[in-house]
Length: 79
Image 1 (cartoon, rainbow, N blue to C red):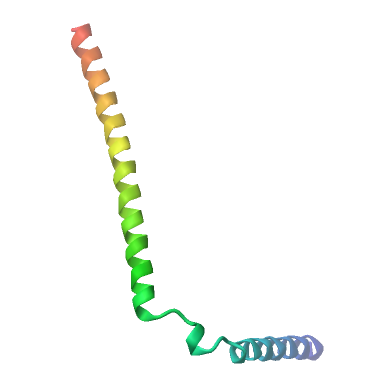
Image 2 (image 1 turned 135 degrees about the vertical axis):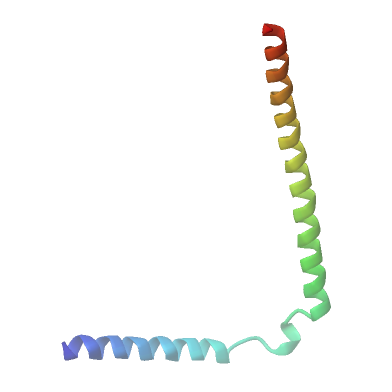
């Protein structure tokens, strides 16, 4: 039991060491994107999402209206 605990503790310490080493090698602040660039990217993503969702909603709406109209005409024709 102690061997398993020792193994997992050493594995955890190695993982923490690797993560800290990777964090220390991060890019400098000059290579990060600015706040304005991030806001522009977010606005573009929202605009793209709205455009796609509008197209999908309109297509689904036309399909549902067509199905409703077809069913209505079938019911009226059978009466």
